[in-house]
Length: 259
Ligand SMILES: NC(=O)c1ccc[n+]([C@@H]2O[C@H](COP(=O)([O-])OP(=O)(O)OC[C@H]3O[C@@H](n4cnc5c(N)ncnc54)[C@H](OP(=O)(O)O)[C@@H]3O)[C@@H](O)[C@H]2O)c1
Image 1 (tube, rainbow, N blue to C red):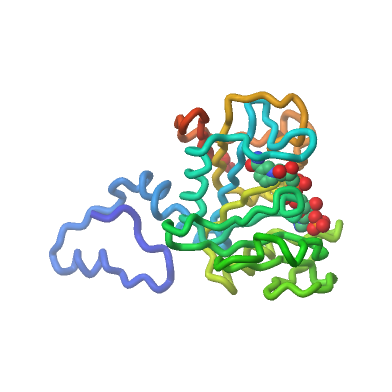
Image 2 (cartoon, rainbow, N blue to C red):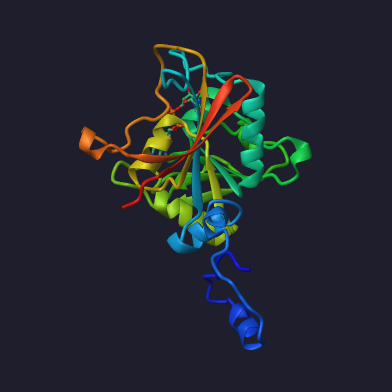
């Protein structure tokens, strides 16, 4: 039984070989489960020619990703944060904007017992990330994705990328470069709201994992900033695939409805 055929050019035609040898081969068994499970990132990256992108966020019930003073630790409880470490460990790269690095100075690593450490990527058009940033330290690999016009203030590893008209890192180029140079198949986009909005606007988010806390802030940055939606008819609709309680929080897993 086969869930789905290998779509790559290197596929060896194993199903046909088995059939020619008289073996009964059934194709498509549990295909949807597999396409949304262990092979989702790989199949999507092959189909789209870029890594599979999961945007993960934590927000209060009223959709705030931080308080009015910029502080956001912690919106969700320990079980939800442990679940984020699991998501990170499953990803080849973790991506954040420089705004999050300046506000929170996150490590972006995975707890040592999780094994694999994803590549940490800071999207920082002009090199505002302090050389002392925790996301550049420690054993996990780290890279600063900058615009070609910017000078490197001394980061050990950078990606030099084309700029958009507003002189920010061009996101499709970032993803294709991560795939080509760093074998990245799956990306966990951890925000913040400005960078996530740009990814959504560019149609570069394949899955959304939202951790919603039973808490209210009433003010502060939203979970998602400008995403290219000016009117309700342009709203980005998602399919709700899973709702799970994690500790006192709720985890929502959604995928964009693609036309
Ligand atoms: N609750 C959560 O899940 C969560 C997660 C992360 C952050 N946060 C909170 O969010 C706040 C920070 O968010 P933020 O929106 O200011 O920062 P951000 O989204 O992390 O970073 C935004 C910055 O990324 C850079 N960038 C480079 N290329 C870009 C592109 N193509 N499109 C958009 N941005 C690009 C821009 O700076 P340059 O132009 O200088 O490059 C931009 O200002 C903090 O309060 C933090 O605590 C919350």
